[in-house]
Length: 395
Image 1 (cartoon, helix red, strand yellow):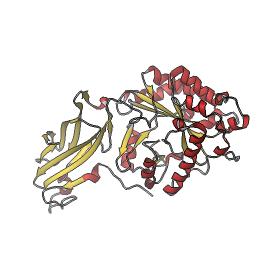
Image 2: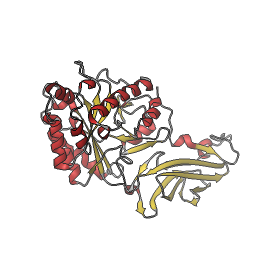
Image 3: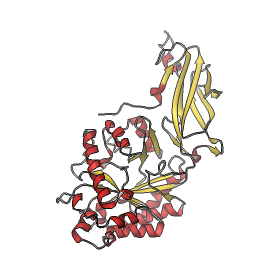
Image 4: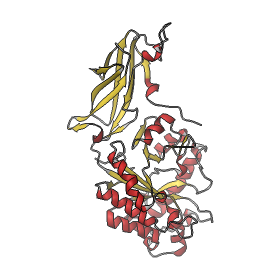
């Protein structure tokens, strides 16, 4: 069930002879096949770059392209000669648009070869954060059962509203269609619709899954099952909360879907999918079946474009229910100092830890959110929704 890798090495092409792939090694020439190639090492195919990765001006973003090519070959990048140091080469390239192709060409005794990558320039990028909360259902059941006068009579939504008033924070609540005791979204009244709409500038609802269990519901499910569940939840959100409150999902339950589901998700408005992209027991997990090369890259970077689907994968930086309040700063500070992580903070937690009846209830859960949001706010990060503009950048 793995995804076919689409990464830099897959873009190698042969030149003058018109034959794709690697040339055959001549007898007695060790690693001749490797020596016949040219390879761009940075930027990575699909890299999302911003002003932290180069020199930005009115003309564009100038970045350095690094790679390797056979000794003695003439090498150019986007038509310009490069600086060589042994097999390594270095070139300055000016990115002038959102989607940029970078082409390295080597010509020598093994013929002419090319390596192409595409890099995304996050134009007019600014420091920003988004806050997403997974596994939501309890607050909807609570409001439906208690028949509150206002949705903010529910302590959970009131807590989020307080954080919005204090920091201008924005939240996307990823919701289920049903709870394990039989509550379903059609039971939720539409009499709060205006209140939802009045607060839609900072509070959104999105699909997460049909239900909390079974675990990993879409890991091996057909795309049609995922889309059918998404449509059911989306229909209900629009019914009781209005179009303004609906957000395309950015986190699917357990962060695992079949690669064939990506294109249908894009058709439903999905532009970003957040995950962990980290190994568990030696295998990458919560990574939407992204291949190992790209998952490894995402461990060390904010985001990566998947050109086949048009979806950007985003690395979650902080899961509040997993980090004590007094450890949040030490978790975020190294990220803020790393150019590959600093521009976008993808913050995250789960609803159930707010509720005293939950077996793993966290009495300080609200404090953890306050600490995390205060930290990014004091450092100039602005709250965004990922579906508005490019990764929340509407510039």
